[in-house]
Length: 80
Image 1 (spheres, rainbow, N blue to C red):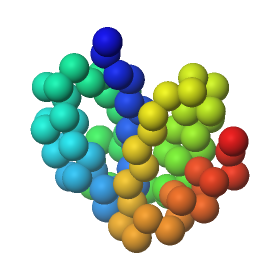
Image 2 (cartoon, rainbow, N blue to C red; image 1 turned 90 degrees about the vertical axis):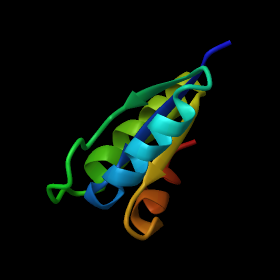
Image 3 (cartoon, rainbow, N blue to C red; image 1 turned 135 degrees about the vertical axis):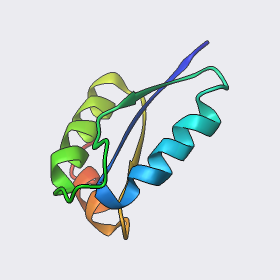
């Protein structure tokens, strides 16, 4: 069984997000990367909201990464 993992970050988490996909992508895990794809400054809610919506609709696993973790955590916790 291939596990689907939805992953997103802000600009501060792009490198870690890439490393997670590299290390765990070879273990039968399918990543859906919602971005961003470079370190240009972005607003974390632009990525946290879509991830939280997809995770709540698909009942799948999601990983959110940001500089402190606080902003994406507060945003994701607004969803069931």
